[in-house]
Image (cartoon, rainbow, N blue to C red; front, side, top):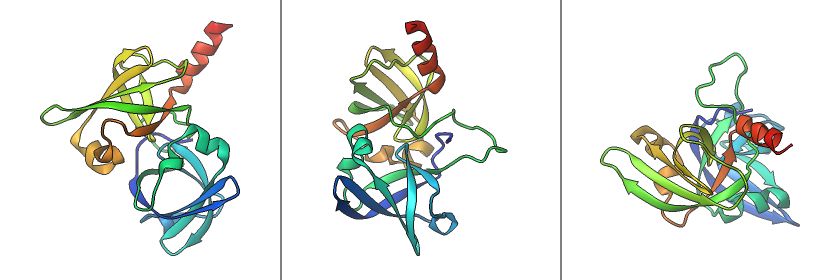
Length: 192
């Protein structure tokens, strides 16, 4: 379980393919606090730590994960939003995030709003967003604006822009989406 509040940017330092799986090695300043078998959200995708060496740690993505996320696009040097699992006695500053990516989306525009940025995304799934509802983009908990069918926007403050990988996104960038879990349950119940 995560909150969508990004702790830091990690950097991809190694990529090794083994069968259909890909092992990603990342560098992070909190690697010394990790342990084998711990869950860490990478651009919103929950992956298990399988190896630790110094300030580097390794996680493995299976084909199912690669099919549903933007991890297959990572290269050496890619900046990745990182969040360790939430502590149950802490504040929930973002929203309830499972670390289970629902689909990817394409950034279709980035608008500089003289002090903030408005990003618009389109996606192809039956999931919905709602005005002022929550959505997770690359693991970042955000508030939806301009909700439309298969499209929505979010506005980013300077802190989020600088401390997540939003500053690397441009029109055409692929991102991971996790829709609000409560909204998904409501939609499922309505379908019944």
